[in-house]
Image (cartoon, rainbow over all chains, first blue to last red; front, side):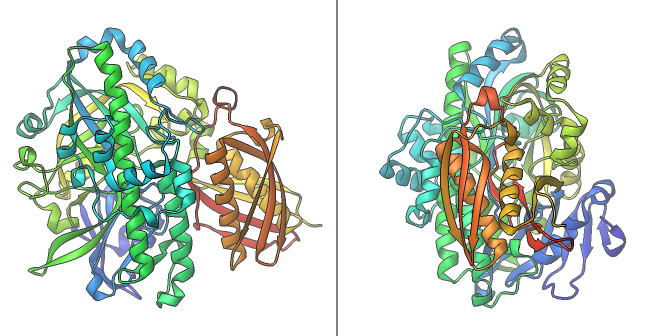
Length: 476
Length: 141
């Protein structure tokens, strides 16, 4: 990104004043290196978002931002329904409520190390991954609707999860306002046999070791100790979310002229929050959030079953579950006045700071856990929402490393079997259905996740708590 | 001399662009569908064992392309099939197509990724100056 048009506000904040049709400024968070490495399209897309009706304060791009669909991935924007604000299907994306959850196990790496190959095989057998693999669970129409209304709470009621988990999931495991009737037959059909499946692309299930602690007090509160083993799952709402995203993007793009909205880019497809179309989308999108929460709960349940069988001494507990592709109605203070806003986070994690009432009580003093997925080899991060995140980014932080290299380029440069061998030599056991898929997800195809989280900390979005390194990676 | 039928991929930051080129609009759409399959597997490795029919209509050609590709993704997701051959007919705002392929065999096909959806990013359907048609968009993986 060409930084010459931006004003540097501080070490990790860059600002573009409104110009042309922009209603608010564009703000880019990141160190100079990260911002320079960003695609020009990130600024173009952030500027486009700043042009949408009813946008409040600013359109934001976070340190992991890259070129997305209409909105940049790593983008945040809030809209005021009282000021003609909109909801955008593109601003949520195709994998609605894609997210990350991390489970503590109480196991030490030394207990797991002798059995990693067996553990990898058992997890790979228990959790369906990749294209064309279905789950063990087939849902009837009534069960599908109950799942879409109930989220992780439904999964737990079916016996696929621990009731104690619900407190550690955003929205307590059940997104309110979901409308299963707003979800098309096609979307439900795609999901019928996909519950408890991981999907593919950058989705994964990892066994990780807590490699380093950066904030001892927050780590203690989160239940993280150096050398201990955790399970991390990254996936979303599967076929159901993809179908809802596809259908509403089309409908919103075609209906925009009738709503009096001029779209600078068709992918910015949106509808006024007070329209029937927007309300239908919100009902369907919230149902997809519940689908993602239920799906992660079930995968977690499958993984815990494997760990319990192999390590009876394990004491597993959900640290937290975050979603990073959402639009949520939240209360934020704007110029001293509290307002109900629809906050879009596309490739961005909610990051409530210390003391926020929506952070579960046992964690509240240190802030909401923010779980950051890295690429296969490089590890992941646990952060905590910073006190300043509310004022900086509607309480949002980064979601991952972000790609630095296209899939095409990655397959030209790398071979899957070589990557698997190299990772094994570094102590990471990989299981994956496709070696081409592994090549496309080569660690070097991603930005340096360590630099991304450091930038998020410097920008005042979240602070670093712990660095996790993979031991076993089940790749979709 | 109109363009020879072929498909290719193009670069998009996080995902991948698919492009079909053909002497006719229909052939460009069919090649775009092959490009879509090629994101997942090599379409040449697929046997035309079963044929599925899809139909869609849209107010413009670009939306029709996205609808067609998403209809194929729906068939892949629900029938657990991959398609390598396409016979496309377009009349006015309506498309009808026959897609031939086989059930996914994860061990043999080793699909690289699952495509979540065809998007409107870099979406274009247009005649080529040398004759023939181009049909393209980015797909989310």
